Image (cartoon, rainbow, N blue to C red):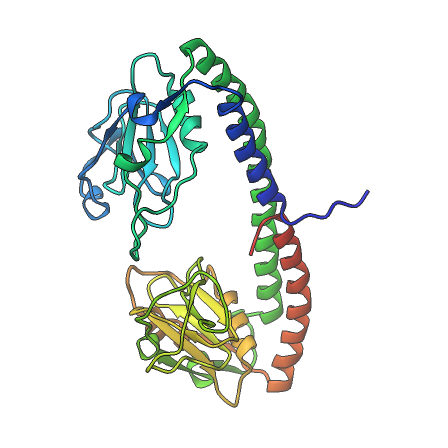
Length: 363
């Protein structure tokens, strides 16, 4: 029997979400507003200040989970951390007590006769949408605190929470396994690139520095200062990009500044992350560089060369990695036809690996 996967990871997450929603809202008629079953506590700890605090045994949560252990805590009891600012709004974490959060999260402490795990699953059953039409999304407890949730006895809360703990643990194990498969495929892809490009500093061959077969342009020459739209259409069809994991985070319209319209490599000078792009784009980044080829190189070959250097370069905090390090690296010099032949080989192999990654849940 053939199964039409959209994404294994996506399907597992959907099953998990639907299971939680169905268990929380399964035929319970009596309702109560969320704000009556928990208390909301804010935090003044900023991301910039947290790393100044001495290390200790108490966890502090940020948008991505636990970011550090420090020597004090703000919340004594078990509580739910809710991301209130940024792209991860509505994401929740279960805090086991003696914890803190950054100022971009709030802590919901359950009231008397409210099971903490029940509250954790209740929060996952709520659909959050930004309550500000601004660049940085935001949600307010003063608004979602009015959401009505089931009002059931503590014993029923605990029964449902135990059931969900068991089922969610099983699904999380499947999700973890799927993510490990994706990670293995990403490693396989990188190994294939490294083997094909074959940058071995001890190898005897004709070499050249990357700066002699490439050029770069500052990303600041291609800024974008208009509205960013989530989807692409005929009116706003120019990609707004980053060199990081998000890559294309929206689309924009034509403006006074021209977009970049040639195949290129987006390079982040702070992190050394890079992306290949062959559609028109704006690159609003103070730390970005646009790498292009010259008549001695193929642009996709350059992209694979940069990727093959992964793990061979010591990344420094906020350094000028392209100018100071990457462009000065020596690599085997091969002719343009040879480069294109290797690009053709890698494109074919990586297309196959990427199809597996996409099936599992990659982009």
